[in-house]
Length: 184
Image (cartoon, rainbow, N blue to C red; front, side, top):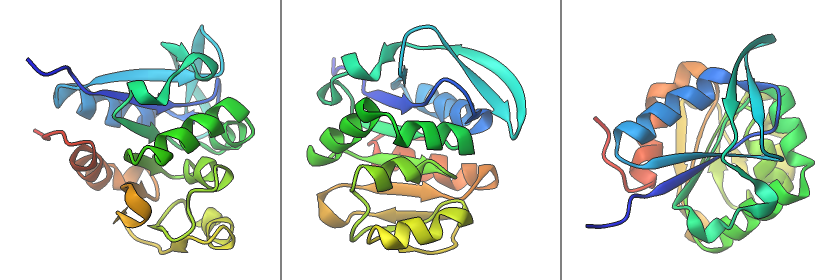
């Protein structure tokens, strides 16, 4: 029997837009893959409903101890604070750089692409995000557009992006395809 695919969900400790974590997570599980929560340190992280604190989630692996070779894909949920902290975390940036260098797929929603900008991997890629990131993405060499979902295979790896929680149905569908998983 083939080994189950593992998908890394990269988050910081607070400010995660909860539905952008939990909804893709559930789709990954239903498709038969193993989601793993990666954060700066072991313990718990806190989800938010916009600016309102919500649930806590147990961290599986700190970025510093995570090997990108162990994962078949990455999901980067949004949340303004989450994304801002993520892009300043050298271990999270390194993880993305190495994952992309290996040609593996990434799915990022809302403010999540800030981490991709910091990792220097958006040049030549077509993507979308929360509209406030458009200038950052363009300045980093990406082709930004206001669309529900964008899938880009340029530069030897697949990137799936969406703007906000309203886009989750399209985001989940395309992320599962990019990860080689079958949606239900």
